[in-house]
Image (cartoon, rainbow, N blue to C red):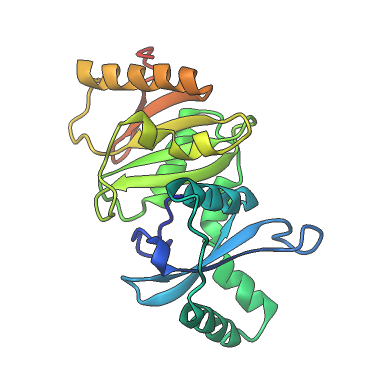
Length: 235
């Protein structure tokens, strides 16, 4: 299953917390063609709505089918009722769109292409605004626009891992050409990469080549600066 997090508190959303998936009309409105997911956040104890690239819906279904191809998805009627109760509380279309939006500030950043390490630095700081120690995985399309982001580490149900099957999980499920960048703030006194850091990164580059996924960079972020393995010529 595609990793999904509450945009308010960062809690990982398990499959049983998901209320439903949907898609906007491809010809109408600001969000035309995009999908959305509704879920109950177990920490906030609130129903949240998040805009998604419509391909995420395909990824979600593919991932579920891979886990158990013989199991047909069942819809919990109580969850459906709760979902529509939440919709009834919204009086206007604008109110619904506001609930669907991750946040205006985040939209302004993730809608731009990643062209240099400072772009990753800005995205990381905005998405990890609570400054927890985390590893971020960015999956980009062929034009370097962000298709998805995932966080591993502090405050989440997913520990930090550099295993290729974790780093390339989303990119592998997409049919189009993709690339991956990772960024982290887990090193307190970073001055230069250790031999282990370099070997782990080179392993990801090799794994990406096997999967036909470009591994573009590994970025270490400190409070007021960042270090790019690519710019430092370590990869």
